[in-house]
Length: 326
Length: 155
Image (tube, rainbow over all chains, first blue to last red; front, side, top):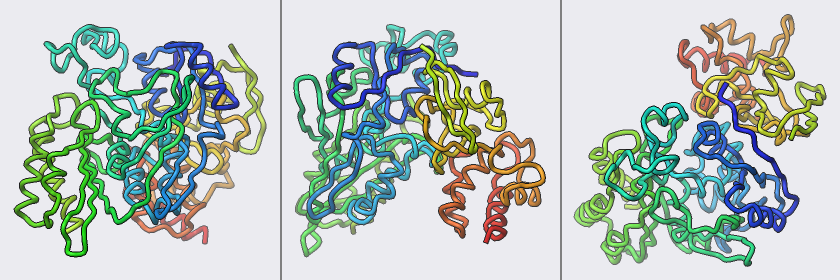
């Protein structure tokens, strides 16, 4: 059996109490909601923590309210299955429902949460491995070692952002509420991330992501495409979230284009968004945009498939994604 | 530190002293002797340890036993007994939807959760509901056929 290391388990009764525990335990404590990302890493001994703070049942993190006219609030401990099936999301923000349905498997969607998916650890073929494998290979920069095994000359970690929902929520102009010992703040989803495989979240250790906030749809249409080896169950090797707002003549008034799984944070391709503005979705401009996005994507050799293929697929899948609005 | 956990498994209440880092899978198999729930990858990738918690399929290898306290847990032992099998179990036997059988308990429970919610699923819906369970010997066609057969039987 692959067993968990011993830890202290605490189940705070309120959000305030949870923040207090995180603040007093310092770096020894970790949050657990669904556990589907944390527990495999603990079994692999890449996450070695003394205190697990269980927050799935916190009332402050539960519930989904709103509609596409007023905007939506999604409690961070809502499971991915709840996000998939909630009527307001299925009808109003269908892209989010479809993206959540592409995360992992039915069992994991019944356990994993939207907050957990946003805070998902970055992944790497040298990191998400058993302890004995990593020891034999030589430990990496992200855990126990001092060399990046993907780019041995590098001083940084290149582990890849693998959240399906982060690009989609960025395309929908989502925000997250963070509650910490010094109060709370609301930040755009984009600002939650940094392009660093180790410190990939702009979040204080004692801050808890409590809510995802979506603005009214206001004419935006969005699509999400995910590239992976098995259609049933895999992390993305590339993902694309695109949102556009078109005027009556079909010209694009505004656009958002985000690539996932090409670096340690989701990548918003602003030059491609700029190129789309004022244009109709015709083959010429689509080629320009695909070229810009593909140039911006610089994946490294740390997940399934070759880097060149992943980069090439940016064009193929972006063309398909844009085609859904044409 | 070990704590007393009260679990409702297959309609019975069990009280077990367990440290919090033990998974539901370990507790079911090692403390309660319910070895019908299998351990495969133990990392959430294969679905062999699927059990139902309040009617929903979850992975027992990634659930802490302390986190499912108070919930209704159903394992394959609670699905049917010899002489009184669940329609899904009968259909799996009739169709030949297993070879080594190691993945079968997980498939049965994923399929039960599907049929409880949707008594007449399409083939696509069956594929989706079973997409978190891996079989390495029979292949999936017979398994899907068995679920279809059980759905007809249960109607």
